[in-house]
Amino acid sequence: MLLKLIRNPWLLVSFIGLAILLTFSFGYDAWLTDDGDRVTVLYNEDGVPYDSAPFEPSLQYPLGSDSLGENYLYRIVDGAKYTISLAASISLVQIILSLFGGFLLYIAPKKVRLTADGLFDTFHYAPFAIFIYLLAGTVIDIFVWSYSLETRIVFPAIVIVLLSVPVLSTLIAKELEELYKVEFIQNAPSLGGGVYHVFRKHVSKFLIPKLFVLFLQQISTVLIIFVHLGVLEVFIGGSETFKMDERVDGGIKMETFTLSNEWGGLIGKYWSLYMAYPWLIFGPILAFSFVILMMNLLVHGMTQTLEINHYGKKKSKRKSRLQKKTASELDFTKI
Image (cartoon, rainbow, N blue to C red; front, top):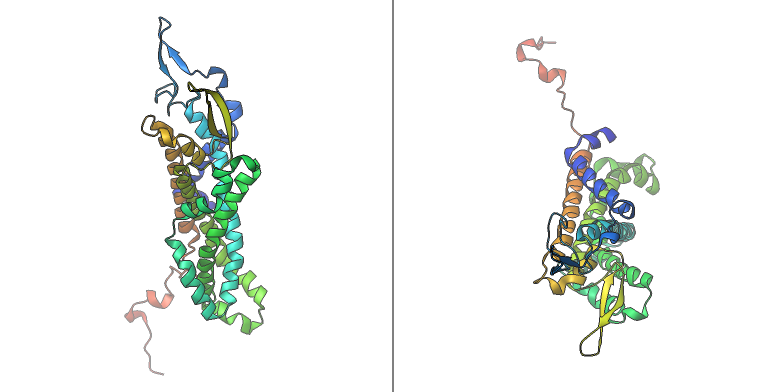
């Protein structure tokens, strides 16, 4: 099985792409930091300033620079480990809770299951980002100063999980219903198999690969939610407000920065500057698009290799000896 996974080109491409990104991200401090070379003003040969940060994309700054003069590509690479890790953690908790919820729905009376399907089906069309913003807005935006950094990261993640569990639970309940209709699984109890034995020996062999694929799909879904929250200027990866300088009118200029360089936070930070400096938005969006594409290729490769859409055994490609014989070779001697 491992050899089949390695030979699948979609799995290989997606795995290599994600591995390279995460390797550079975790090695950011050692390989990519450029704090010593950070500049905010560029001068010509005569010493006259001609440009100030944020700088446009160039050979020196492939994705431009931010308002502090830092290479924007480095910030995006640094934020990869936090963005992907947070999305993966949220997705894992979603799958675990939904597995229990789906099993409870499966064993519930049919009337209860149909009622839950009707209620939870509306979540397919609900704008998750709006609900998250409304439910967690007091923590991540309005009263941000009164909550700890851990609370500002964990609480929105909990909201995302709780909003997703009902939909995933109904999906898993339907999957269990289809699995228990398979003939050999239905007949297993008559041969002495208990409930736990049937689930462990038969149902889990088909369910676990599907749950793994669902987990990868949920990572893409959570990343899309991060994009939407970024448009709403939400710093889900943690943020801090700093005093920048005094304004002309005597006030103090305050700016909020993402502490982890999480991509949604980068979008939220620079969303108001989109028209003037579009590369500050395009960079994180390109990063999101790349990871979501790699996840989709990973799902496609896993589906192809594990053949998880088939519950029964594969039909043998070998024809029987009887099928290979012609009519003239058969013995029709009357007995």
